[in-house]
Length: 282
Ligand code: ATP
Ligand code: MG
Image 1: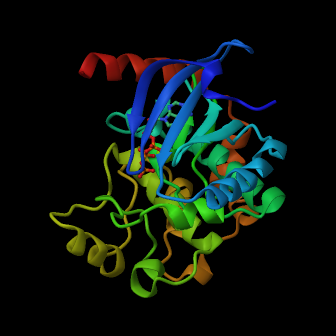
Image 2: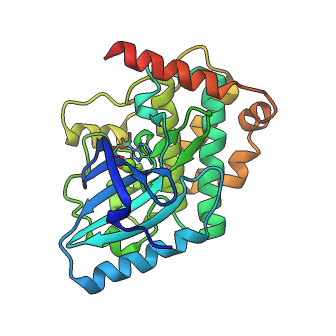
């Protein structure tokens, strides 16, 4: 069935990014809470139809590591994208002063499995891996959102502002080369370091210096206290030569992942604690 605006009750704003706002909505017919992303575009009807068609392939995608897609519609020139509501929000709002190694490991496992699913099952490169696009719920599940499913949607976003915190890999900054899986592996590594540090790893006053640092400076490292396996996992992802970065299959065989795969980590309790700490600090 198709979702229509009439079926939705707007509940509250969850946040906003470069292209629009995300709201929590309630779908009356199914009694399901959803997150609805409004993306403002200036496009004609045929392009909008093409975007909806491209998004439609998401209906056949189900993975425990990917935020579920419920449907999309457009009104005038806005696309409304309805997805699973993740009640703990994004990792940038949860990591606080940094996540402990075992939590980082579980997040890494989910992220790699999510990225591998997109690539293997759907032939999709994520293109926007960063902490705001890694969502959690109070059950402690970690899922990816905002991947590049629709070529037309991607083209239609006015990408003038690349944001003040870049997760772009050195080869993309240098050569604006084609986006590859290896670029996502870089962004994965950088996002994990950020979650461990509790802040974006590069210090910068302006965009130019920051991009220069990504190319010229040694790659960011985990803070002290993390295992050498964890550090090696990060080092593998953050190699400046994209050809040296491992595939997802290889990353899943890394000792850091193999070790924590069988360790039981209470992610639900950690998530609830992180939410409580966030609420205290506001
Ligand atoms: P950018 O515009 O650069 O992609 P962003 O990812 O922060 O940045 P949005 O994708 O618009 O911007 O999301 C805004 C915020 O809404 C996110 O930071 C996240 O906290 C929240 N959010 C997005 N999707 C969901 C969801 N499915 N469930 C709960 N919260 C969400
Ligand atoms: Mg996002």
